[in-house]
Amino acid sequence: MSMMLKASNSNGPLDIDLSVTRFSNATTSKWKLSKSLLPGFLSPVSSLHKKSSAALASENAELTIGPNSPTGPVPLTSLPHTSIIAHAPGWTLFRNLYMSGGTLLIVTPSNNSFPQLRMMTSPGYPIDNTPENIARREPTAEHMDFLTPEQADQRWKTSSTAYRVWSIKGNTILFNEASQFLHHYFHFVAELLFGTWAFWYGAFTKPSPDLSLSLSFSDAPSPPPIHRLIFTHSDADGWRDVPGFDSYFLRAVFPHVTVEDKRSWADLISSTSARSSDPASHRAWHFPLVLLADRSAASRGTVGGVQTHRIAAEAWQYMFTEKKLIGVHAARWWDPLRIAMWKFAAVDGADALNWMKQSFPRQGITAKADEEIIPSYVRQGVFQEFLPPPQKVTITYITRQNGDRRRLLPEAHDDLVLSISGLVARKKLEGHEWAFRVVDAGRLSRDEQIRVAAETTIMLGIHGNGLTHLAFMPPTRVSTVIEIFYPGGFARDYQWTATAMGMKHFSVWNDTYYVLPAEPTVAYPPGFQESSIPAHGATIAKLIEDRVDGKI
Image (cartoon, rainbow, N blue to C red):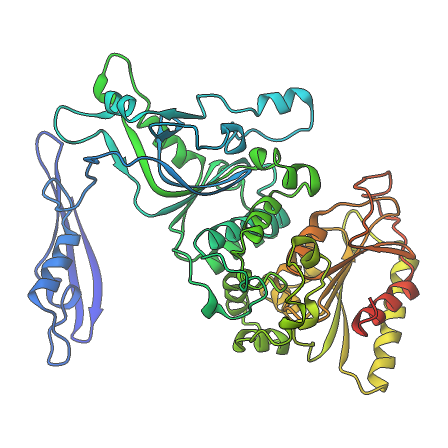
């Protein structure tokens, strides 16, 4: 079989002959590149560009496919013991974790120093708050187990010095949950990946009492790269949301990362599923560095399961308490992802650009040096006063009036827009730089939505997915999220993420609002999802004015 391709270079067109020779036993194939290709394709030879013989040899080696290939998987000749770099419920960073037949295996002489298995993993089933489902999501030895070095030797050691264990090189994140929450923009970006980055970033940062309120990246090293993400219980569609923001965000901030799903994971399981009649079929995969993120395990923790019902809270609070997150009052630790997203979307808002270009020394922080820096203070916005003021106050109202559910009463929507428009007009007459935008996110491109978020000082909207964009607001002295609920209803989704980023969050019931440390009880009353939500425009406009003036 042969194929002819046309290519060209500065010397004109080239004919490329890709021919395949198949041997009679059908076990070996060899690809050949015709000589006419080599001068222009592998090594253009000219007075301006010449490659060394070593470089040519390297390139030719990469093109060789078949039994004589110099590269290939090499089984381990020793089994390094498993250790844990960092752990919080549902978030465990391992060195030297193994997997065989679908079971995650910890090789260690003693399991006394390891957390309970149920605080690290689960079967990965969808979550339902029933006794039966809770019991079903408890892990067994089929999901994770311990092996002593002697047991590992017995299972995987060969008669030579090698083990039947192959290393999957690079740094891996295992997302051990079903697609139930993955295909929601908020749960994927502002919860799962928010928690992932907090844990990954913090795990490789040296703890320092001065780090929490520092805004200089010179105070903290960069974490190692992430090479692959594996969604062990989700297919390729299961982690993608309908508007496309999950994949948009992932490719923007991690363009180099390989993404695998449950089919890839099933391949790894199948290739290490042993047969009792064949000792050589006992094999394992080795992960040199892997973060295991498990939603069910995180929900068993006090912070994630009782206090906040947000799995990212376990990761964030652990690293916060360990003093490993830089600039917690402005989520400076989140900036590698936030700024990557801004650059990808071609953000040019003044506050975002100002945030990107400045080093932000810790001016004024010494005034609070005698106060303990604790999560509740950050979540109440206590330290926002040390951030730069906005160059322009921009209020963004994310409307859902064209959506299917959770809409304001038509008259409430009109009253809200009129009240805020009046406030902004008055502020402009007073000589202040204020702006008000009513945004229907569904009518904007993804790039445009990120640009809007990056120009926003006050984000306002009914409880809903559009508020996820708060993760890309620029940190300022008065950056705020105002979330409207049906009176009597409340959910912590956006409240937790906003306050974990150091911003103030206000929950509004018509003409009443709540702000930490006070908050409503989580509830979903009749009317929560409906299209008859009230909102008192004058109250919300006064709330915005008082917030910008520093009164609340």
